[in-house]
Amino acid sequence: MIDDETKKKAIRRLKIIEGQVKGIQRMVDNEDYCVDVLTQISAVHESLRGVGKVIVRRHLESCVTSSIRGDNPDSTYDELMDIMYKLSR
Amino acid sequence: MIDDETKKKAIRRLKIIEGQVKGIQRMVDNEDYCVDVLTQISAVHESLRGVGKVIVRRHLESCVTSSIRGDNPDSTYDELMDIMYKLSR
Amino acid sequence: MIDDETKKKAIRRLKIIEGQVKGIQRMVDNEDYCVDVLTQISAVHESLRGVGKVIVRRHLESCVTSSIRGDNPDSTYDELMDIMYKLSR
Amino acid sequence: MIDDETKKKAIRRLKIIEGQVKGIQRMVDNEDYCVDVLTQISAVHESLRGVGKVIVRRHLESCVTSSIRGDNPDSTYDELMDIMYKLSR
Image (cartoon, rainbow over the protein chains, first blue to last red):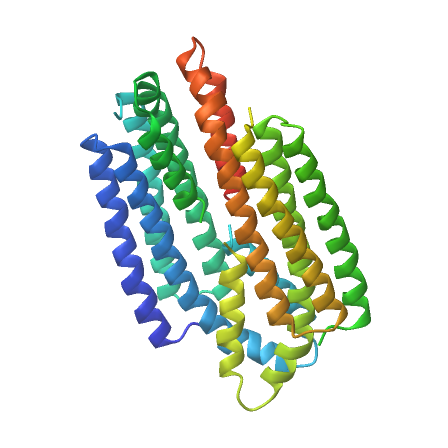
């Protein structure tokens, strides 16, 4: 479960990402140089990876931990690997 | 240079991304299941790759083409490789 | 700890990768079309991700599980996130 | 077309990769710690990206350049984008 600290951290980062995306809209609207636009797109990927890490860490500490301490962690391994490789693209 | 068609396509996609990011804020605020939040983050990466492709394609057709048809394309090769590997992460 | 089944699976896949890498050496030596060489390089990345998954799965089942069932799983979370993001590039 | 310099550079790097892959086989056979194996797998990905860059650079300088200087570069743009996003995974 997402706790208060994770919520606060994640939402702050998501607000920044929202601002970055609006900034790229302005850049495109101004017909800025393509490479500058692409550099900003790459920065949003980086910010998204940052917020992903906050959520993954919380997920490990809460759901994954209680599942692995329980009797049947197999589905948790599968789910975790699925996330790892989904976020890895 | 970004032309009108690229601008229209890119801005439409960026508005969708803005909506996706706001949606993730709501999910986090509602304390949705971490894996669902991570799946949505992965969807934003995918959408960003989509808008990146629109811009890269235009960049190839305009700047890269005129540079390569010119006398000194070397810096264009470097810049292009830099973009390729920056967006690839 | 790597067990016998993981060892067998991983080594079989690594032998295939060794063969793929030698094949690319021949392609380069024959001056094959660059795009065909790049497609094969991309195939090796995919095979490596396959062997990575075999090892990660085993790691989750063995070390991660025993650490999380123990008293101090914090360093395991860090290590796991480090792996996730290292393999994700 | 791959030229002599590219050939030499690429083959040297591919030999190193072959050695890295054999090294991972030994690590797995010795039942080394999973995280160490995964770190080495990540190093092979990095080496592959290095050889990919050598080939991509040559491809830009030769095939892409002559195609773009010709009359119908459209298929080259498509092929180039296909490579960029294939190698980016």
